[in-house]
Length: 473
Image (cartoon, rainbow, N blue to C red; front, side, top):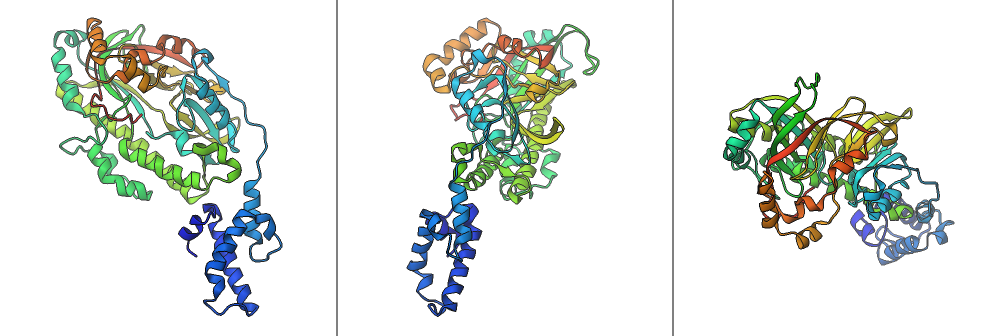
């Protein structure tokens, strides 16, 4: 019997090798006892029914020499594993929905979990909640990284006067319209170029097969909460690391990730992880993990890191295109991942820290935490709080689902209101209006022990996906 036939009759994927060995042993045993003749009945319907019986009642086959090992694996698989889940600290408890807490509580039951934290922008997601931080020993969870692998923030400070932003807004609108494209599956008419496409895309089957699609989508922005916008960046004091004096600057800020290929990597390896999940861990569902010493674990790790390089390249192309269209130069900048896993050392142990919608915030580490199309973003410097596993929020966080946002708000009315406040929104949807997000000032106040504020960015010209595409964030 082949793997497909065994899976069809209920043999778990991780037991396939043992099941095949058991079948071979049974056939050999029947031959030795004179009950078989090569293609005897033990290979047909009787064999299928026998394997099904072992899967259904493994305890009855512990004395069967051929099927004992398979029976033991199945019995062990059906046993509930009882152990004490790890504890975690939460920032901003009052603004977090119960679903996010439930997801975080469940994540703390993952056997290899060694540390966890929940950020103040947290809300319910898939597997690990958005705003969830989880450290695992010798394992990685594809859905704890997320679908949009290496979703990323990038801020570039430009050599343009703030006055130009108000005097010639049409030039900034044109630069955003021509510098990138938005929407599910959308790509530039002319293929963009970046050195990331010269890297090794054969690290996994899915990256190899999706390389052409990735190239087509290079420099694009996707849908959902992805955006590209101009704004005024304000420093109240000079920052030597960034090389900027106190004052106001025009800055370009973008948020997007690894597009379709990143989603394909997540889907592929999460399916593998879930297929290998023992029945005793069935409640963990999308929190299924891959051991780092497994072939699939190593493939996912390589593919995830490639997606990090690709996401960074996406932003680099966007910022280069937009800056060139404006005839400007970048004089400074800050960028960071979220939706990623890092190999780090915490409490003397090497662990894989998953930050799903969380910003790395080690001591001195720079990052960007956005608000909404109407509310400020902040350039921050990490404080390295060990309780948060050196993490902070990745934004304001949603306080309303997309469906509720569309039901409650009328996009044209919101856009007109924003225009009166001096904010031009080229395109977006009602599911991304300011009212669907938490108050960014309150979120920042909840994490003063995680980051220091370096500068404030106020959006002025905003572009998001406005074609009704499903969210990719």
